[in-house]
Structure formats: C-alpha cells, structure tokens
Amino acid sequence: MAISLQAPTNLLPIAGIQIASTGAGIKYQNRDDLVLFELCESSNTAVVLTKNQFCAAPVTVTRENLSICKPKYLLVNSGNANAGLGKKGINDVIQTCKAIASEADCRAEEILPFSTGVIGEPLPVKKITDKVHNLVSNLNENSWLDAADAIMTTDTIAKGYSEQLDLDGSRVSITGIAKGAGMIRPDMATMLAYVATDLNIETSDLQVILQNAVDQSFHSITVDGDTSTNDACTLIASGKSGIKLKELSEQAKEKFITVLNAIFLKLAQAIIRDGEGATKMICIQVEQATNKLMARDIAFTIAHSPLVKTAAFASDPNWGRILAAAGRGSDKALDIGKLSLYINELEVIEDGELSENYNEGGGQNEMQKDEILFRLRLGLGDAEATVWTTDLSYDYVKINAEYRT
Image (cartoon, rainbow, N blue to C red; front, side, top):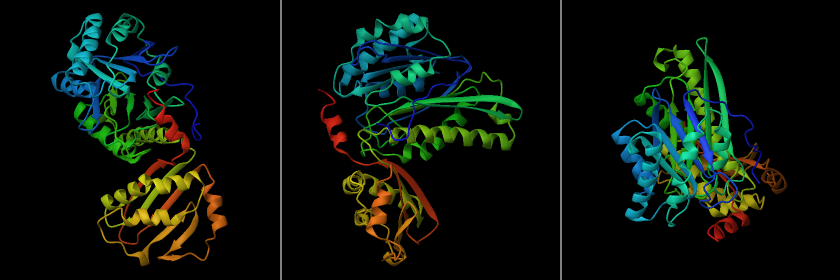
C-alpha cells in the first residue's frame, strides 16, 4: 500500500497535447496498457534516457529518431519491456512506429517509442498494431488520467500532478505523470515519466531545464539500486499558451522553474511512496560534506544498504548500520569526532559520541513512523545531498519473485 499517496483525481489538459489510451492485452487483462501522445507542430521535446548499456529496443530507436527529426507522437506500452531481444526487438518496435505513421500520415522517425514491463519476452506486435486505429481516432486533450493508469506495471497507484501559474499576467499550465515502483535507481530519470507545459520553450533550453529537474528529483531516488533497461523521462513544451520563456521577466522565469521542479520532485517521491513492498519512506540528508559528490555517495550508500533498509522495516533503531554504511560510502576521509546523526529530530550521535539525549525507546518511536529522516552531519564543509528511499520488506521479495509467474 502506497505511503501517504493518493491517486490523482484531476489532471489539467495541456493545449496542443492530445492523448489516447486503450487495452491491447499485452500482459494485463481488462485494463489499458497502450498510450499514444500527439504533439502539436509548435511543440518542442526534450528526453533523458537510461544510461544502462543493456538498454531496451525502444530506447535505441528513440535515440535514433530524436537525431533524425522532431517528434510528433509518443507511443507507450506497459507489460513488456522489449529488452534483451537483439535485432528482433528493434524490428518489432519499428513495426509499431510504422503502423502509427501509416495511420497518422507521418514518418515513422517522427514517433518516439517507450516500453515498460517484463524483460526478454517478445513484443506482441500484432496486439499493438491492431489498436493503432483506435488510438489515433480517440486522441483528445483530457486523457492524462487514463494515461497515468495505463503506463503502470507493479505500481499500486497512478501518479500525476498538475499546476497552473500566472507568469507576468498570463496563465501557464504544467501536467506530469510517472510510473515506477521497483527497479528504481535511475541514472537518468525514472522508469517512465511524461511532463508537459503549454509554455513556449526552445529545445536547447528545454533539455537543460529537464536535466536540472531530473538531477534534483529522479536522480535522487532509489528503491533497490537497480537501473532499468527502459528508463525514460520526457518534457514537452507545446507553446500553445503563446508565452515564450525567454521573454518572461527573471522573476517569472524563476517561478516557472520552481513549480516545474516541484512537480518533478513530487513525481519522484511518489515512486518512493509506492515502492514495491514499501512500508516506510526514508529521507537521507548528508550535510557538511567536503563536496556534493561525497555527500551523494554517502547518502546513496546508506540508502542501498540492505541492513539499513531491513532495520527500517523492523522499526529497529539500529543506528550502527547507518554509521557503518556511511563509513564505506566515500573514499574521502571522515573525521569521526565531528560526525553527528539524527533520526528525525532525535539526536543519536553528537560529535562522534552517543548523545546524552538518546535512548532506545525514543529511537524505536521514531523508527515506527511511516516517514523517517536520517540526517548525518559530517562537519567537513558546506556541501549536502538528499536521497529518498524505502525500507526492504518481505513483500518486496515476494513481488519480484512472482513477477514473471
């Protein structure tokens, strides 16, 4: 059950972005599992893709198509990753793009394909191509909620957020959806995420904005330390508001970026809240590090420690596991005499010594909460990093042991 997370009930349409969803029976029955986005002519698109060298066929084709021309459509399927299938996987995804191109009267290279699901199973091409006419015929601006449902795999809840904001007297909208619950330690973004705005943003600026947003959000989450073969994050600017980012005042630009980054962070945190088998959402803050990389390395080492994660699942204030993980988290020297550790607001270690304010009962009370903050102060500098993760439960093992059965 997702931790303090509710499914969206209303997602704002973005002018110039039309969406259709349908059920193709790729893996799941009696639910939508296929989505088509249509982007208006004025749209610009930025994409960040997985760094996993064993990337899926749709990732390869998307990279190639982005280098050829401006995208007009995004095709997304859940239930099958189309990964690990060599030339057949590439040929299969190209067939689905050609089917959309034929129906929509565009080039196959103008379509970006995305897949998520089981690795190593052939893509059921005919099931997808049989639904192409249905998808193209039912495109509309009000299907963001349906798309959020259709892209899910082991997610227990759809993930999406919208915001409207006034910029220099004009209204701009932002809507984003994401899916992901396991195989989450992205080195780019999340498993799949789609965010759109009606602001006019040039492609070069859009790519920078996307990368910065990803670094603060999807690059700072982990469920299990695994980077998917299919990770993809897309940011679309339709331009239909008639407002250009580059013509806004500096204050308005800052406001837009702040709200956009907040949506990315909410989507990333929603993935943690819905982590496979998760019962705890854990925030790890490493402060006063020598540099940002050191802080991130230590934070991620704590986040990936199975001993820390299982202690959190048991509500066990075994703070020694946190310190042990921190001690191997960086090749930079630590000064134990300067180190302090807090569980939520409870001080555990002060300047390398057990705090006089700490007792096991208090520690257990903090560890029993659904949301836990581990705050580590190194006393070495002014760099810091924050990472979000989950505990490791029996259900995580069960979900992943039974995923293909």
